[in-house]
Image (cartoon, rainbow, N blue to C red; front, side, top):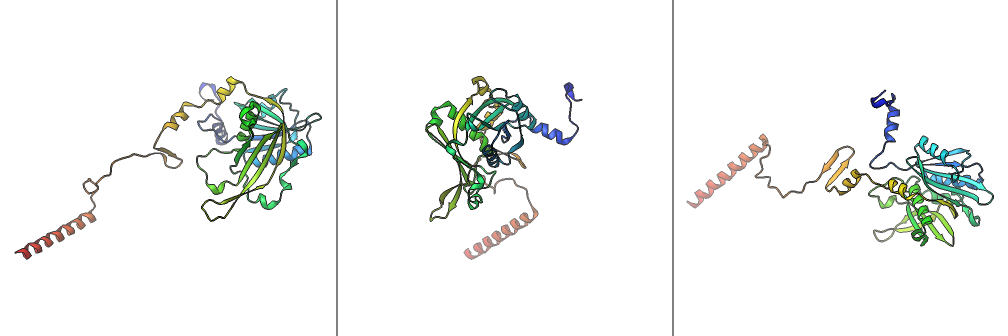
Length: 313
């Protein structure tokens, strides 16, 4: 028993797991779990597996079916989120009215924040990863950071489309980095909205040689290919959204710090701007080898002066 009646874990692995779940100034990568509803189809199962491949390695797929209806009762999803420490979920279901559906959602403090339900086999346009040629898939390293392109005015005007855009970015953006090399950009996610349809496409980026420093870029579709139709949306409350988007003061102060860097090995490093210093006049450490060299130089200069004086006489 620890201080204030808290139970302290005995195993080191348990301590590390609990420490990893503690609040941090910089968040960890958001993880997602993919779950099946009470009824599914082959199309829904393929879609869950393909999206899991795009999310890999920051995802987990559950193979068993669950009696989950998130728009009526989402307590079971909150329980799974807390147990696995995953803040995103994707639920696949099959209904007579809506057909093949996916529900994307996210949690805040293991409580439901917002979610969106879409039909995925609209116009019979569904093509999974394995149906595309294998040569194109070789250029895509799953787990890398993709680029995102959102086409359509709906993503700027409609609140429902803004929620979909935010969810897609949270699902597939991966770890937040400050810099990225151009050669590591190997895939792009394109989402287009038009005529009450949302077109989800995934492309591989191939860099071809050119006569300039900027290479030629070629896009090859690698899947999955889905046409979505918006069904139901549950947006977050304004007060809850404000709390979820609040940044700690320590992070704001770090953003204002200049000429300071942090390294995992060296720790905190600072850069100081000074005037140019004259090393000849500075009181540096005196080595014996340098003292002998200076004496020889002084003796040489003295003998040269004597020869010059004798020549003048």
